[in-house]
Image (cartoon, rainbow, N blue to C red):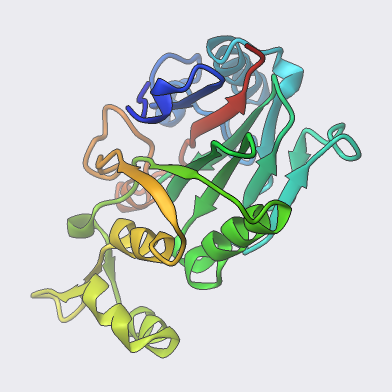
Length: 254
């Protein structure tokens, strides 16, 4: 379990970037696999989600998940739609207390956001595709639309590191088409390919907004096999599937 120092200072929110440890799943899903979309036994995943809910001190029915598709779609959970516990989006925003909104990752970037002024929280699933297509901008813009006076605190969780994220020329060129400035997120390597700094790119996207505090939990999901699931590492090892780590945030009643 990993926590952002600044978010931990607030008594009215609870958050956590969970590692892969502390659950009940076996084999390649060992052990806290929270991916309902994985090929793990469904009962194990549900038990793992119960463990997470317990750690967050909420009822399991109040743990909200996303069916993530690397889109730029943002959903606001409110009184009208709070019966849907798994929404089709790559970001969730809410002001409802005593629930936890969650993002699943296995190399992509989990982002947790707290707006201190308006008592709103958000979670974002930022893979390269969602990031380049505006999931980060859409989330902040939606929060600003809800109230223009904001005070954002952002925590960026564990994700794949630069040295382990090798990409081809087509990938590089897609980012350059978006903006020539994106060159700075790539470094060429000896394989005539590039290494991409996804974390740096996500941080750059966030700088477009007036964010009071950004904290990075600078941990590499690919490199830290004992602590995190990794899509790329599993693929390199020839495994048929991979687990997903969960990151959560919620407002609590004082």
